[in-house]
Image (tube, rainbow, N blue to C red; front, side):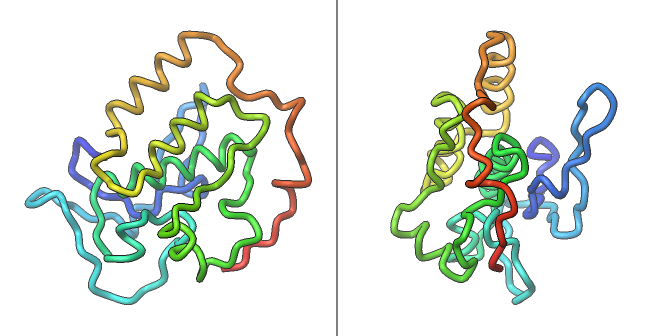
Length: 169
């Protein structure tokens, strides 16, 4: 999508289909915008937002770039590695922007390796230019895959933290 200069604006587990051979495909381009001209999209309408997946600058200033989708990708990783856990569990969506502005980021799940969590944290950098590009993320994830290291230890998975969480949006 980044290469095609499209900003998805709703990158989340609910919009990723997993097919044969565990091939993942991003779907639901209803909020996507083509930014071929200037690489930035400024939201002017007041429609509903997927707040818990939306980047800092998009929540506060309504400005979206490919790097805003990188933020959402970090949240998507959190969803995947918590086996469907809700982002910002037990936090009202109305409070998310303030918490993020104060520097809050979701804590590291104890069953997730530090390297994976570092990737998420890099995706959640306040300044979009400090976040990795999708090309860099692809390379990093490919390198990790080649290492054959265990990055998720499900024997340490805490079902109380991620199962049956009420999403207060």
